[in-house]
Length: 353
Ligand code: HEC
Ligand SMILES: [Cu+2]
Image (cartoon, rainbow, N blue to C red):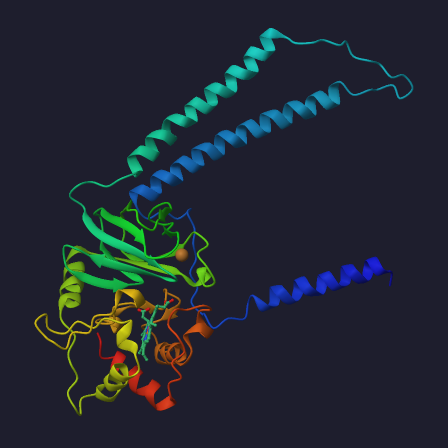
């Protein structure tokens, strides 16, 4: 083989290996993201605008290419021996005006729905429900100020109503994107950005952080669960319930002791009764997800691990055994737990409905 061929073969093998390796992952949940399947008025608006621009661009493409082909064929040099020089002209005021004015009109026509869409989709109605979204490397925290609920990864919202996200970031730039419901918007440290979300059907919608934010950016997903109003109220009142403190002999008691003794309390909040001195409040410096109702979430760890199917216990055990293995760079450290401690913790965490 020539050196060039050798190099080409090596490159080919490398690319192949890289492609193969990308399919090896501990993360098994599929999370399709498409803007072409809108499920609410805001996403509809964006989708409509996309198709409007797409069809205008397509028509122009065929007109220009068609004209080009016609000209190439009609005015080609038929006589191979003679090089006929076409008549040379410089500037044609009429043509110049036409091909400046037509594109300007097209752009102006596209600008009208674009600009009005941008204005309509920015900001929120005053009376819509607020959810404060705080971006962390690499998970989203949600706080419902009207309900005093703190949760993570899975946002539950009522169908057919606008929810207003007031977003900020705890560390670096993030970007909240649930394509079926709305376009993207940045989460900026020290600033609040607004994003209106609205769904006109119930269901689960996938989202993702859309700004590269460090090692595990690709594992920073979000989930929005849209439910009807009654179900939302039931969820909210369940979330407002305090955690139950396991007594000696209760299922989860041993796991709760591990939780108290292994430093988990530095980063994770558990809210027992409001008046209770046993409330565990994470220090701001090491903020991890609030675990009061951890077991009620359908996904966890940045919405990449399953919280509600038969693989849930194994996934939780994998997570507790070595978080940075599951999510490279994770700020939850490997706490070198024993197999017994892990299974006790899983048993306790399952009680945090
Ligand atoms: C130094 C801070 C820190 C310590 C100590 C810590 N965690 Fe975490 N924990 C985190 C962070 C940060 C996350 C979010 C990680 C992510 O999704 O990228 C997390 C995520 C979790 C989750 C998933 C929560 C969810 O909804 O996504 C569970 C469960 C959990 N931790 C349990 C524990 C237990 C049990 C311990 C003690 C054995 C512990 N953690 C110790 C910071 C910590
Ligand atoms: Cu991010």
